Image (tube, rainbow, N blue to C red; front, top):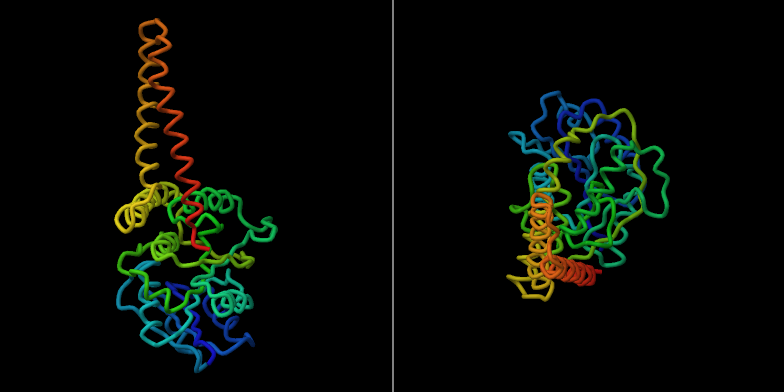
Length: 312
């Protein structure tokens, strides 16, 4: 039997773009699917647009109060699991995610045994001339930080919300522990790594129009690095200490202590020498340099081992 596929679309005050986004999905000719709109307590009449669509494949779930991006997706995932869908695809209601690529997104799950597939706007040398420069730079920085935090070193473009996941994989994730805000996409990767779920990037271009993103760049720049660092520590503790103690944790802990000691002691010696006008002795300098180098090597070795542990 063919798997039951639903397209999950979270919306909040999406009046300017929602009608066109819904029609673009419903007019597709690919395999049977159902369309689940999760309305995050919109106040602009978004729910009226959805109710005005008479397509039997379309269903509306209106949340009683605003949950945020992650909270809306969590509620949608729970609704999809309760309805018995086998594959849940996620598509935003702003028209940036071309629906004609949905079969490409679902194929790795049905044919190759992957648990999760996500869009990648850069895969295969895709042109980025139409992507705003601030988004491009921010995506590159957040990609590296997300790789380290999530443990999926083989993926790119983690901010891409065009995704598909199997119901089996979704049941293995603790949805109560997933971030309820804009950090949702990144946090999902961390949760999936803890269950060793395989992920595949799928080449899907983005469509940029006149829509206005609800993400505040200042908020992302200040909060995401801290959140990613916290999730990195959480993943290392859960996966490499609590569940199965690994040399990765030993290298990280030992390397961090040595590196921080060498760095802080080296700064202290430099400041002290400047203040007194007397160069530090060679032996004293070595007390900073040796731990610094050894700690750096241990941290690099931990990263190499973590890359080898990436679920493939």
